[in-house]
Image 1 (cartoon, helix red, strand yellow):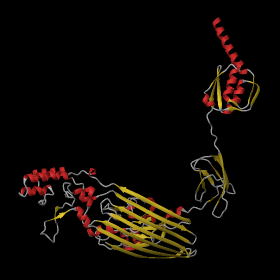
Image 2 (cartoon, helix red, strand yellow):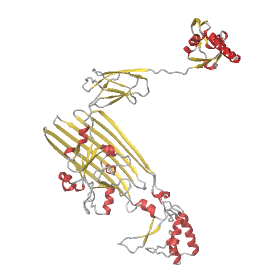
Image 3 (cartoon, one colour):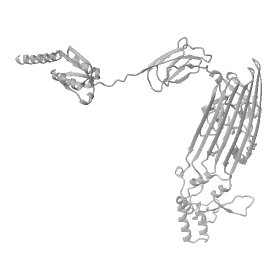
Image 4 (cartoon, one colour):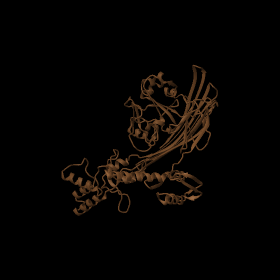
Length: 594
């Protein structure tokens, strides 16, 4: 019982001492005094110890503090908390620490007015901060006031039903006035389909058709619109028979309509039917190769100038274009200028494709090819044709050894040499493909004149050395609104291009099918010619000729230079609200030199 009383008495004594110290009254006067000196003074005149780090006090000064008959807490609140410090009392110890810096955000105020194109105020326009949920709305006078904390990259979005939304970046200005424009009726755009002769409302269209926007199928790796249509239209097959630069794919709509005749669909550009640049009999394999190089009816057209493509796929197209439309019709509508100030646009892209390498194929090297020939001979297998005697191939050397024209030592020496040749035909005949495409357009429109000008350049070096394609296009389209009822459209297109290819030689196929034990060069660096069987029905006396594919490519090949100039004229006269007269005509001039 005595022990419990002593502990209780000690506790009350300690609490009493703490209360006394904190209730002790002080009179202090500090004028421009260092905070560290103030704390030393309080330490000497009270029963408390102060704990702190000197570096956090720095050069902090206590300015103009005069207090009379106050407690220690009141003194600490004045000299510490007002200078960015906090404290905590633990028994007879006062711990001082620095308060964290709290940066107060500045508030910005933006005012302005929203009007339409006729300068009428627009009430109820929503004004939102992009990326945030902060916003306001305009009053009946079209005015708004927006207060928000200062943020970086601030952009305001003005939106109203029936008007085009507008984004304005805040650059420090206090007032932002905005003019909103009426939106184009997108519903009408979507539901209108061009048949080449007229624009028809979608609900009035009869038959199967598909409409796509050019911007939705634009692919940088392709230079023509027919290549971009691959996989975009149901029922349309785009068949690429070659990966060479400048070649034209084969297009079929809903299968094959004829076995011997022309299977190409009709192309219609702005109401003008496009003819082939040169008439060829499609039943010949040679003419098929030529068509791939020369191009089709729209090879002259720059894809960046196209607005929409409509594909008419069934018999309903023949009601418009006749029996020629049995293969389908592809209708192209080109771009026109848009109302507003002049717009200058540039579009460019680059494409790179690495050359093929033998590590990508499961093909034999020289040693494996020679060993295979030995195994075939040992197994008693026969060749389709008797090998030609020559030292450039294992079969030819073996034939010479068997006929006694080569000794055993000479044959073994030749065999060992052929195992080490290992010619890299892919390196000699192919390269890394590089292509680039550039287009510059200028568009604009007013109440009377609508114009669109463009220049495009495309260049593509194919993977096979010697294969390349280059094209330059230019276009000018002008629409004149002569009156409210008369409109005239004039369009001029010019194109020039060059396609380089091969004649009788397929470099990539040669590299993949020719033995690597055949040398391409002699030891002195000159071309090495091996004997190749000659298959020419008009001269059967010569069995073989010396052949080197590099020499063949240097002295053969094909180069096609094309040019075209196309002019179209469209005149529309609205006689009555329900009757319109339209005249469409065109002139086309094509040149092809090969």
